[in-house]
Image 1 (cartoon, each protein chain N blue to C red):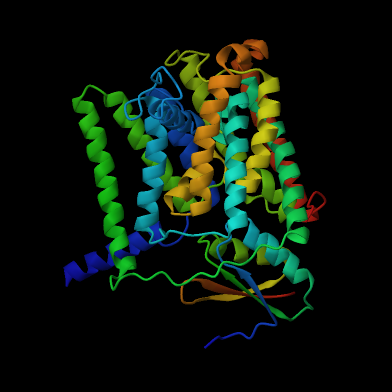
Image 2: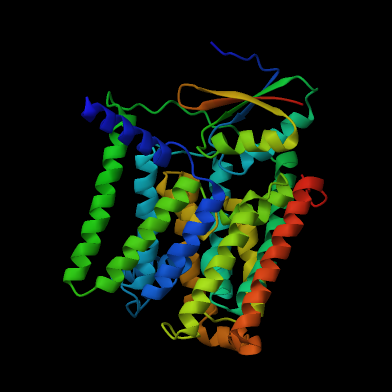
Length: 391
Length: 78
């Protein structure tokens, strides 16, 4: 008897974690916590850096680049953070029985293609995607984070205008989808086991890394996977923070991202002030880069429907449109960085700037919290009044 | 059998976030209060997004039904 109660309780717990989606603000708090841990451990969370490593290796493999990429495909910090995100989200989707290869109409695939390219190019200029260029950069005290925020808002507005135009003027042929044949296997029942297996594989991968004296990289892989789990269970989406207030008026995501930035900013400043990590960690790129890159990226994320992290976790869920976006993101980011916006070109746009160097740590924290509060307050006001809602 | 009889059907299968919600918003504009819209979709996120959207917009989310290979959602215009 006691056993069946235990099994029952376990089932309830499982449903609470993997059946229902977690509240958005929980995602904000957890991501801030995991991001701060990642910085303390070695490298703050970013997505575009890992995607670029994938792209670099692809072009090296086909002979376009002569030199081998500086970052290893499986043993470098940026690469494993994004591997972790992808496989963590994949495993989480399986555990939630939400994995399925999802085809999309051709027009949507084209939007994923174009959106991926714009995001790849934009993230080179701004020094990272929505995460690395805005979220983590701002938390790290880089002025470019503010600039990218403005750019992203601008890009989101332009992108939304386009989506509205598209709805009126482009007829997208609906997908004639046949129900996927499961070949007699109850696919939904197997998924959670496969998901658990996938998490086990990630842990073994990290364990294996520590045997090769790559413990630091292994832990980042697991942190990336934890981020993937959280982000998939919440369906956390940075795009929504920028887009939804103008689209449906909803500010749930905006609140969560603003809260998350405040928490991680305090966490990052503690680590930097205490000297655990150099002050200039993740502080780079001039504000022009953030602004221009953010706007280009913003249009791209509206087209594809996912930013850097959002595209990767949706790709892990099996959505073909976002898989295309991720591939194009990686390839265009690599090419643009390699041929056009090299490190020298980035320097010509100005110097990186660390916020506390201008005003001290105390006022930097006040300023960031103030800006986040204003962003939140304006969008919360709009939630009631719909003054800024365009659709 | 369907519990609700829709006055209008929106096929959003294969579309991912935000298109199902955006199209729902537009489709609801053309309905009269009390009329029911059925939204067919395949994006797992739509399951959270539509009830939240309906609550904010003053429409009523009636419920969902699992179909063969997709989900159907029912929203009554408020």
